[in-house]
Length: 106
Image (cartoon, rainbow, N blue to C red; front, side, top):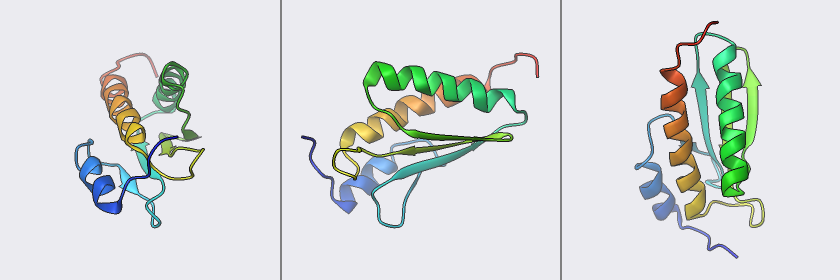
């Protein structure tokens, strides 16, 4: 089983991520609201994160809204954050940068 992180460890790892990620008030969840100019990009990003989720066997909560995607990450088994949650968030950052530069039709 994965090891719980201290609040200080969580804050240190949070600072290594792209801006936009936040810890929940109880510091057991890592979330980001990603805004877009259209409806298609949140859908595209959600699919890319779903593919990554299956690859890493790490499944976040995704909420698709008009022009935005809410990503919430935690380790379900322990109902808290572990280092792999921050690794997953970093991989999501890479996907977000790729979708932001996507120039497909709207």
